[in-house]
Image (cartoon, rainbow, N blue to C red):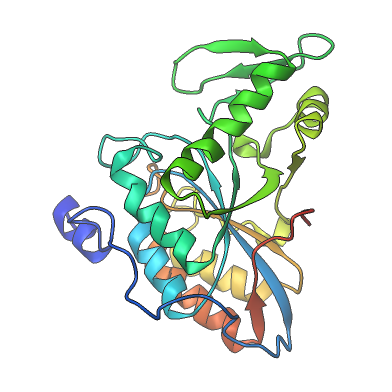
Amino acid sequence: MPGRRSLLAALGLAAGPAARPAAGQSLARPALPQCRAGTLYLTIDTGWGREAEMIAAAMRRHEVRATLFLAHEPDFRGDRTLGPGWAGFWRARVAEGHAFASHTWRHWYLGTDPGPGLVRYASRRGEGSETLDQAGFCAELARPMDALRAIAPEARILPLWRAPGGRTSPNALRLAAACGLRHQGWTARGFLGDELDSARSPNAALLAQALRQIRDGEVLLMHWGVRSRREPFGLVFEDLLTGLLARGFCFAPLPPQGI
């Protein structure tokens, strides 16, 4: 693997988040209007952010729009992904026509429900745990979207949320629904595997699997970079897009009611 400096340069991140796209570079229409193979719904969870610029540039080149699930996670620069250093990045994605939804604020994980109307919410990074009631859980889900509105008031925000790891609980689903939010997971064939160990699941294998098995209507899941993965999936992301577009797929943001 290349050193940190050369890897960041390859990913287009050596100088930090990219500026807005040039005038006229928008994602107003799918790359293949005929959609002869069907429509795919690419979703991107926040993650570590290392490959963010490379992934965003590939989507811009191919006029692919996605649904971006936002959380305030630690990033590869020692910042957090909804901090001031990322404001330009998110504004650029809003301008390109992507949709947004909540991935919780702290990106903690839901556990077994502790009682009626309560959810257990715990950090995997040793930051603690809490029991949240209706108001507390609604606030946790709303906070990343409030942060995005402060950055880009015109952002298209969907009434959807995604639990970290996709792990929900009966109470979490009920409390979120009372907040006006529906949980959005992903399809089995849409799991792109970018958070798997790259020694066991190298990019070439993940790419071949995705191109072979993805079908019409899939909800695809990936991240803007995963800290633990040594072979960044972003390096083959554009190959994935070109392969799926060549098969005749279109990409679209999720509908407000989810899939």
